[in-house]
Structures are given as C-alpha cells and as structure tokens.
Length: 102
Image (cartoon, rainbow, N blue to C red):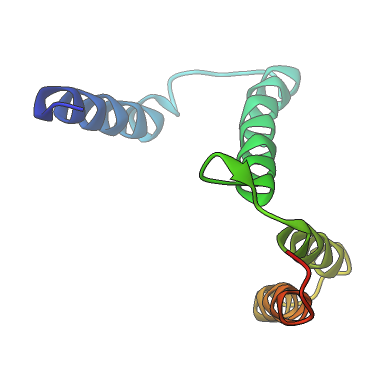
C-alpha cells in the first residue's frame, strides 16, 4: 500500500468513528433497525474468528488450533472469566501440539 492509501483509510476510519457520537442524538432508529445494524458486525466478527481459527497464512492452521478455539468457545458459553477462557484455549492447544497433533 502506498502512504496515500494508508492515510485515506485512516481518515475515513476516523470520520466514521467520529460520526457516531456526533450524529447519535440526531438520528432516531426503531428497535428493528437497530437490530439490523448489529447483524453485520456479528457476521463480520464471526468471519474473522473463523478465518483466524482455520488459516495460518494460506494454509490450514491445524486441528490443535481448531480444538483450542472450540474449548475457548465452550468456556465462554459457560460464562468463564476471560482469563480462564484464554488460558484454557492456550493450554489445550499447547498440549495437543506437544502430543503431535498439527
């Protein structure tokens, strides 16, 4: 990327972030519209998690990482503290890799 492209993307991101607080009181949205606005963020986050879980560079990241993320999801679903979620995922992944699971 060129410096110009990076600066344009940074300015655009800053403008979008600034627009929320500045325009938040001026625009009234129904509950249904607000729910529709939340859905793309959830889908984008899910896609990011899936991509980071399954791929490392251009290759499959291995089953150890996939199982570690699954353990983290289970711990989060059970409402474990964030530190426990991260430590459980890291421990399971490390133990699986130590056992030879790619």
